[in-house]
Length: 297
Image (cartoon, rainbow, N blue to C red; front, side):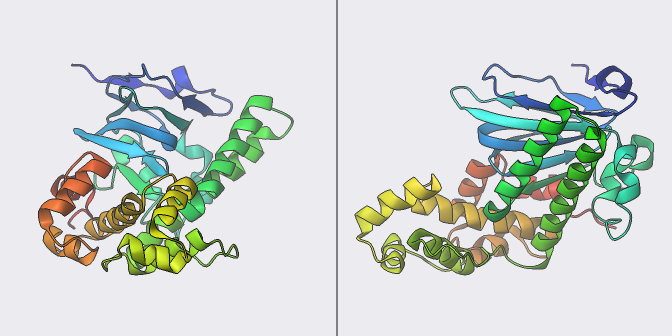
């Protein structure tokens, strides 16, 4: 099957090479394609499929991709699954001058033209931490509002918000390379927030639901109901997502074996780790390492 190639002159304005789109159709099935421009893809809600580098990835809210020029990929809906995704398309020249060092080892390689990017990563895949998702989503909404209304100065406003978004992506990427995922201290003292912070700080340990209920000072059955109401996930699913997020960070660093990482993030059996990882991402830890691990120099 031929790969479709989208040129900037056909997709973007020459005066201001930028556009923003939202996808929600359960009929969406993009063919594999490449762009002459950069695309940022962010999952606002639900679950969908992202074909990237020959892998079929299951992505959900908080997942963000920076797809550089020339990278083959495609986005598709999953049958009976709702989702909403926002796409930002733009030419590198729009932001390159503002993203000089210290971004040279993270964002700048993604802003290269295809002929300049032979030795650089061709994409970046991150899961934005829950504490930052609303900030990202507010920036995306601001960009959409400016682009749709096009009042005087909208180009400058879009560019500034886009740069803020890229800086936030860079900081999340660097944070993942420095230390384990942690939930920052929150002013809101809701009991469920206390439990979430405890999970972020202790995800490598066994944390039974009863222990979470004790922290929240609730009966286990009631705690289970309230936790899902507040987070949209069961206690176990939330804890496993935190563990898999950390595992993805460690695999990208390529400093330990898959088995060691599985135990390090709290799984007692390698088979359980692999099964949970694949359920979250759509691929096994080994496939993730081959596709997204730090390139050998």
